[in-house]
Length: 434
Ligand code: HEM
Image (cartoon, rainbow, N blue to C red):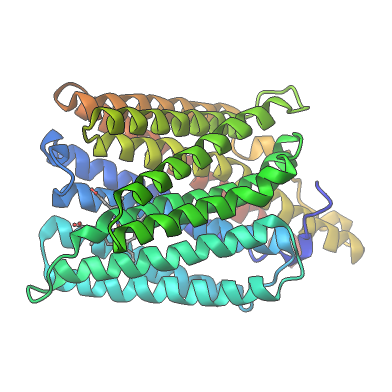
């Protein structure tokens, strides 16, 4: 493994695992809600069902897996230790899980009190995460660009959450008017700030490390995060002091940053030195193609002056973000299982208890290749069908949501099976030692 990985810093496996396994559960729930409500739910941007599904995916799937991956990657990539990792992860995971469920339910069954509970739970979960992790990042001696980009991403999450809670007050109380002029800003900070910045930050380290490629160009790494962040700040200014010119310039700048990132990533992936086909690599490629399609769709819609909110949402949430994260799950989970079992074996060897060791399979065997490949195919088909459903809902909505449900169930199954395998090995180790 790469020398940069600080193996001893890794938190217990249950810390990231609970987040990563919870994510596809929300994907499954989102698909079921879509199947239940049918194509009318995407007739316009503001249907409660669409808002519920959006947050099952952005909070339940994306934020859930991104916080889990961060808790794992920060100690391993940056050598940072999170104090009392199990307690801390429960304090973040439980309210995030319940808060995401409550927010979605609040829209689906229209109970105002649920918005208040969701705001409290999500506010708590994000606050402690952001405060503790930012403090650790500030203290970290690591000076890789990933560190500053992670801080920018956390700042973007903070802004997203504040705007989200403010918007949710408009649903929670009749005395509070819904500040809909802030919705686009909320989703821009959420999807282009929090999600895109974090994916970029992580890509700069994990693509060269796990895919054995060249590094991203140094200038790209140095400037991309800040450029995106400044464009978001400019966009926020344009909303506060309305200026159409500033708004258009910042949007074009944002689109250019994303396009450059997508093209550079595809180019870096081409420099891969290992020739064996790799599942995570396919997910990265699909995600970058989705990002390019997103920019194209946005440019066409802007030039022709029409709105494509559902298509853009599908391309960024499912096509770009969920694809990247699913691909990383197929690397992170087997790697962690391999890492934890190998470390336990090493400790036993050091103590002279060689016979108590357990057999650790190759990383590529922990989640069988064929199972991962099938899930990738289902994921890709669901993406194509969802894109078509955004354009012709009457024809494609049901097939799209059905395949999406099956793809998420397959992901849940693949991840749970790997966790089960790990627990069985640990039980084997413990019986051999007793
Ligand atoms: C504390 C957490 C959050 C809360 C309380 C929250 C709340 C809300 C509310 C109330 C709306 C509806 C606004 C309206 O009706 O105009 C909304 C819209 C939206 N939110 Fe969030 N949100 C949160 C986090 C996020 C995150 C992290 C993301 C993305 C990563 C996100 C993405 C979106 C999107 C895309 C929409 C617009 C949906 C549409 O236009 O159909 N939200 N949010």
